[in-house]
Image 1: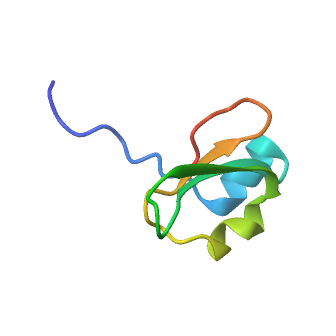
Image 2: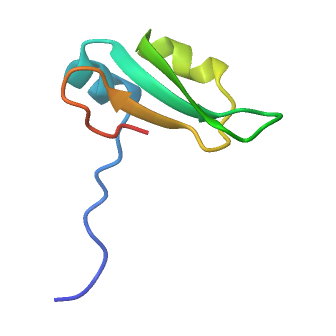
Length: 66
């Protein structure tokens, strides 16, 4: 049967359980649009980054969280 996959959205709590609070954040620079990495950050620090091209990965298993 063709259709939408079940909604398995990640919440902050689920992500913390996976990565124990440590994530790597990939983000785009504002002026030059280059991709930068912020390694070994806490999940709470994600809110300080602009959502433009933001990617968050688990620091342990490298799973894409956001």
